[in-house]
Length: 73
Figure 1 (tube, rainbow, N blue to C red):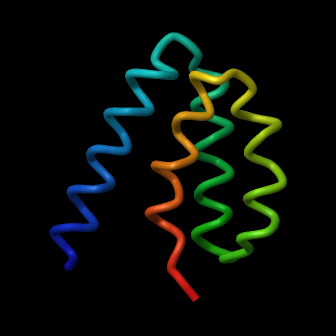
Figure 2 (cartoon, helix red, strand yellow; figure 1 turned 90 degrees about the vertical axis):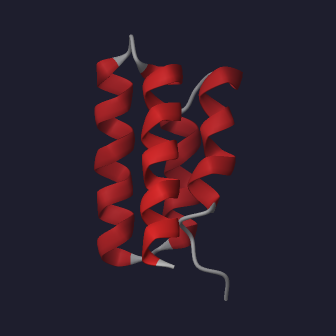
């Protein structure tokens, strides 16, 4: 299971680089928010701030990739 999570994280990083590679400020904001989410586990907060960071349809493709890191209740 740990390797699977690591693999998913690597795939996610590649997707972020692919979509946000030329927008370092957006990438930095996204990772900052994800670190805060990892620490606090506030799903509602994460859902409320992502649309402010991921502003284009292309950016929002990342949301489905972020979902895999949110544990099911």
